[in-house]
Length: 283
Image 1 (tube, rainbow, N blue to C red):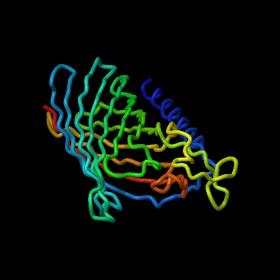
Image 2 (image 1 turned 180 degrees about the vertical axis):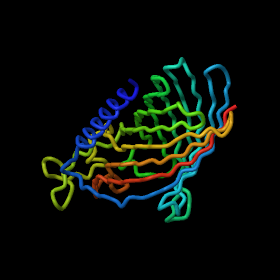
Image 3 (image 1 turned 45 degrees about the horizontal axis):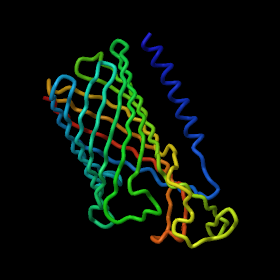
Image 4 (image 1 turned 135 degrees about the horizontal axis):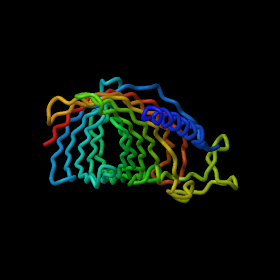
């Protein structure tokens, strides 16, 4: 029975993902730009401390390498608190400090600070577990930036559907798909006439931000799939090994710092593949 349910669920998820990809809207003001696929690695070390029944405190440090794992991408430090309401529902809050690294400039970029709130629902079918996790996050960009290109605080919503199998003694395989939705992208009201970006009445204006009609643009900008397994080394230690495939579509605005000129408005498509290895210690 569980296998039949899993098969139906997999077909449904694949259909939803296909429809979402097909239905991602384009615009006559946008130009599509595709980049070559890249491969990276992600290493993490995390600690989970039980504070009370159902209440856990987590600390994780992650390092990422990109450019075929030859260059440092970022350090990612996360502090979180989760509460298991019952066997079907769990809540969580967290903070992450992200330190991205520029291999071009050989220096760290300005830090990003992220707040997260999530809710996870779980269903059990014998040794199978199905979970749906919804995470809202707000990421604040410190330092200098062009606020006519990106919001200072980016708002996103992640939706992850995961299935895992607990029928083996030490090994727990899993798979999941995740959609990431941008919630406050700039809405561009200008269109490209072949030479310049203009308004609907075919006139340019020098007012700062004249090409932006609001910051309420919503679209799916990343589809992620993952396969992996957790291996229990001991009663307290778990090793997590897996692969991640990302398909990202970002709407990129290039404007001058004064916000008086829109240089380009492109839709950048990237594919990124990650090998992940993590160790978790619980006590």
